[in-house]
Image 1 (cartoon, rainbow, N blue to C red):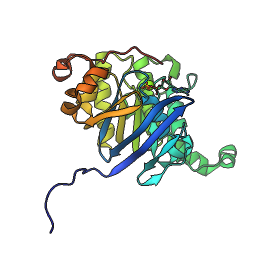
Image 2: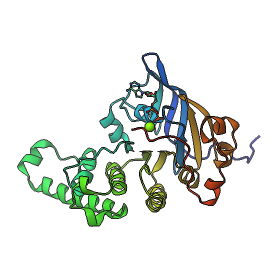
Image 3: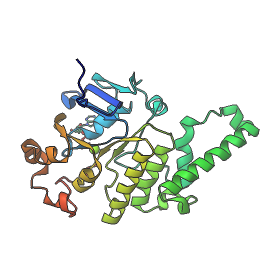
Image 4: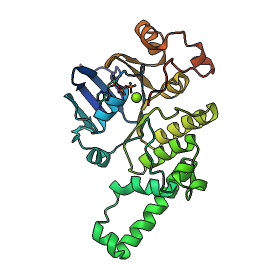
Length: 280
Ligand SMILES: Nc1ncnc2c1ncn2[C@@H]1O[C@H](COP(=O)(O)OP(=O)(O)O)[C@@H](O)[C@H]1O
Ligand SMILES: [Mg+2]
């Protein structure tokens, strides 16, 4: 007999981690973590410093080969090679910004497009019509992305001369240049002032509205709970809870291990950053 009850998960999985374990010698940094990011979703990943959040991202993006477990993108197991992972459709930003400091803003985004251009080395050396056409198209797309991220007026500036908040935005623009289906953001608002943080929130919503699913690590709880459809909490490598804002905020284990104090601020507008120091 058929029923009309809603399925437990509605979003089609884009990125799916199953039983991911990452050990460094005797240390288990990520311990049997399952996590799914569905189409159209913004999923949060929170937890104290050293909980394994960045290591988990590294496992998702091929930087580390997980000791155990699998990662699939749209149903296909990912090869553990960063460039192949990017090519498949996963893009990321780094907790410690990794830009080409002496390249312009535009050039940084063009580098990010590399995996989506078909022009080979010979074509580039000969600079024939195919190369010129591809280059013009790349520049146009890169400029569109800079416009989208609010950096178009800085296109010709050197990346190293951008204020910190704009460097973080540039990392996002560069990640988007690979035309991902899912974007992983590792502490995108670290070092931003409250205005920049609110602008980053709008940017993340706009990226989601383009059809790109998002997984985001942050310590700013207001940012996380404003944005995320679901949030998972990692403590000592293990996912201790996953759910909506209320579920996470009210979970005793999360309060004890991470949030510490009640979160009125997160609900009402005071910026609430869970108590950890900046680490990297
Ligand atoms: N390449 C590595 N080699 C050894 N230990 C590592 C490595 N990367 C991370 N770790 C350790 O794994 C744990 C989790 O770190 P990390 O993923 O950076 O945590 P988080 O991002 O949640 O702050 C820490 O104890 C850290 O020292
Ligand atoms: Mg980290």
